[in-house]
Image 1 (cartoon, rainbow, N blue to C red):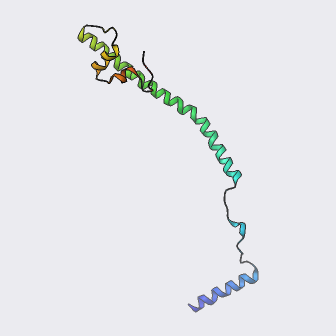
Image 2: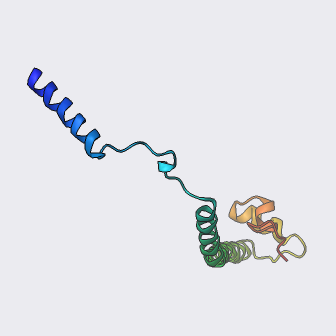
Image 3: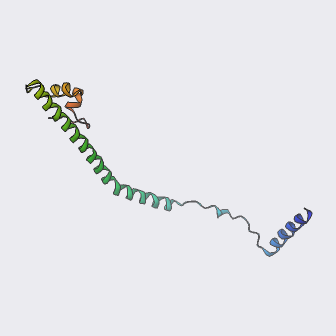
Length: 118
């Protein structure tokens, strides 16, 4: 054990004489600069601007599909109710459909985006 200690002391002395022992520098700490952070944020914003229209279009397609499915269900319920009751409602078509397909009246009157149906 004393041999190991003496060898390590000798290696420290040799490094000091040869100048190979490095002194810690004040600017040795690496970090991102402000310009690098701004560049990364600019790249992220360009990618987001490119992806955003595609995302909005996909959401629109999904809502169109849901609305088409709901309209088909309402049309089917309306025709079945007219066939079963043998009468066509005059004014209260929304109430007629809601009671026959089991939906709430507001679900028949408004779509998922809360726009009124005609």
